[in-house]
Image (cartoon, rainbow, N blue to C red; front, side, top):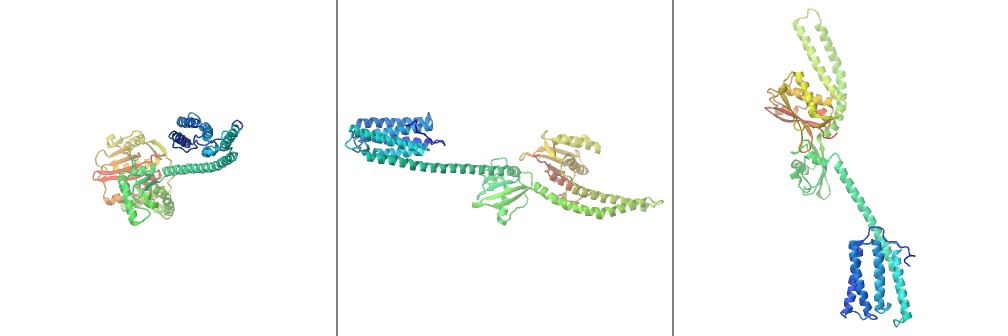
Length: 527
């Protein structure tokens, strides 16, 4: 019978726990049967035909259940083999218990319904109907043998037939139910995997997005923060579960300002542990949570730079047309006037003034044209300390200075930056020449190279030893055409900052006092 039947067991994840619980049921039933018979408190039909066989079978059945629990825990056999073997032994044991209790009329045959239902739930395919067929055949064989050998007073073929129908109906219903349960479980697992994938995808998107992302709950505890936000805020500790005020008090003040004014954005701010000016955009989520998006003000300025350069290009074209041609005529006329014979000293002095101021106006036009025609930065990676040492050697020779006049300090000898070398030369030259112009005590300049502790970002400090600057001057030094020198154009620092932004860097006035000024360039730490 077994060899000729195609058995299909569950090929999905084995449900060892369900099989374990069914063995607990076996132990409970067999123990109750044996104990009630021994205590003489059982119904009269239990063991009524052969009490000794009933007790032996009950003890063996209980021991078999205990052994099955042990094999389940150790998993000595595969799940399919254990299910097949245990449920076939269940059918045999219950048929023997039914025989020793008076046959089919005892009603113990209904226990086979539970066995078939359990086997159908734990298996798939034809195995459920195989169990029903074995149980039906066992009952019919028992009834036939009872009729042949006259074991009992009545032969219940009708009762046996009804049990067989019940067995197959139970197998069909349990199998159908199990199939639907497995389909639902499979769908739930697929959706669970899909949700986990979406969660991982969202986490990767949030982590790799170029904007800083922070989510705080109604109590302003941080529930989500990505790496960019950590870097922008200079956060080195684990922020989850902590309040925003304890991690970034400046940003917490901006949130309060936003709550009070109900505005979309808040003013620029710089965290105490960071080195960048930041822009925060806030949006209220469900259940009182707030989404905070942080942007590097330098990057925002870079995006606006293209618009500025386009407008500046049209402006310089107009300047070239409207000013350069008349300026050329004025300069040429002054040169011709200076070449007249027997020219007086007063006239010669006037021609010098014309030539000098024509040259100055032409320099302003050239600087503005340079800004509008600025080519894209050709970024390269190079060692900043080595590059600065080469530049300082050239500057000492050019300005005829002593080695002790310019000091270079490299806190990290291997500082790699990403910048256009020619444009960096223009920026550093402007800062160093300004510093040499105002410095009064040696060393005239101090250049310091290092890495920020919070964001691990390279920086260069240029410190002079002059008289410093007033608060009014400090507020305007990066504005175009602002200068304190009669011979200056007011575009040097403005151009230097624009060049830094084009190279994903930032130029700041770090400090100013009566002992001098300190400018700092923060370089990009990524290519």
